[in-house]
Amino acid sequence: MKTRTLGLLLALAAQTSLAAMPAAGWRFDFTRKPASGHTAVQPGVQYDTTRGFGYEPGDTSSATFFSADVSEGNVAVTVTLGPGTHTVKAELRRLMLENVVVPAGQTVTRTFVVNTRTPVIAAANGVKPGTVNLKAPRETVQEAWAWDKRLTLEIHGGADRVEIKPLTGQDAVPTIFLLGDSTVSDQPSEPYASWGQMLTRFFKPGVAIANHAQSGETFRDSLARRRIDKIVSQLRPGDVVILQFGHNDQKQIKAGTGGPFTTYRAELRQHVEMVRAAGGLPVVVSSMERRRFDAQGRPESTLADYAVAARQSAGELGVPFIDLNATSKVLYGALGVEGSKNAFALPEPDKLDNTHHSNYGAYLLAQAIVAGLRDAKLPVASHIVDGFAFDPAHPDPFDRFAVPASPRHTNERPLGDEANR
Image (cartoon, rainbow, N blue to C red; front, side, top):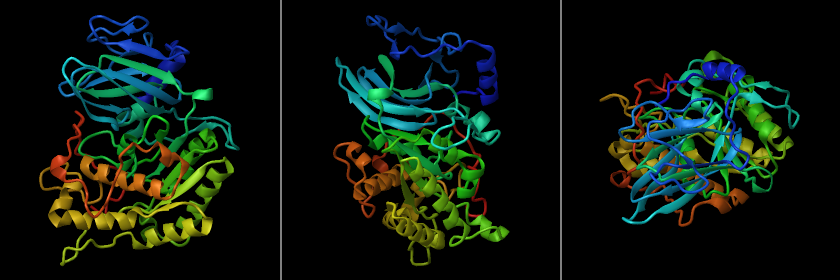
């Protein structure tokens, strides 16, 4: 995996003439006989700022990491895959393609959309210029590649060709922006994952997913660090902003600085009004429960007041509401006391994290969000993949889940919610 830091990247950008993505995009060929009009990429060619593309250093035993400079925004990525089984993730382990099987002697082409961003906030939609106040070192080191000027692909099973095309002007697609805490944010390392990282798997290339969530945060943090400002500055009519906070907001009660029916609701309203003023469509999501069961093996409520506050606020503001809190109880109950352990991260033996999810758990919760968007009849739901179906009372079994793990692993728990392991 990559070890670059955002500070170093910004310094290089100021001192060096970085290679720019061609106006028509990139066309790379990784085979021994490159196709006409493509840039040949030789094995072992590492990324550098002058070239503007190349492989990233790190563990390549299970996957390769390839980067190319792009402009901030949405790009369409088309991969040509040879015989074998292929999974592709982008940036911070966002699942784009899942186990695409290509028979011997054939090739398959697939397209998906990736959103990239930098911390710079443009003066647009009533937002003042500036920068997002990133968390150091989490976002400036471990998550630096989520904020840099390049697109990074994590490719399992190899690829013959990769084409990257900017989606601007007539090619622009609607964007679903995500804002929330660690259960939504792109987690950089195994065994942690979030539904925000898996959501991309369930949409066709007619829509982009831009995940601005961050571990340990609240609505208040979003305002203070200017995450909502960054989103609003990029909003276009028809874009959606999904808002899910609650886990970390509970700490404000102990500190005497807020509560679910006072400051939480006021800050939620402020976000909704900012999104609406820019022409976006806000969607409120109640936080999923932590893994906690009573003596009878029934899921217990740990976020009840915040789930109620989210529901009430959505109703009063007249915005779509996805009750992930209620759905998670049904889901955990269906999995059972023991089976539900598979849905949560296990960073060390016998140290199950009962708040943060595994790839499997994140995958299930992402399906719940997709079902909620479909049930709300939002226009972006027309881009849900064909054949999608989800029933929290009958979730996909764990033994059939086969998304390859990423090479990087950590024992460090995501920020926030320390008292609720």
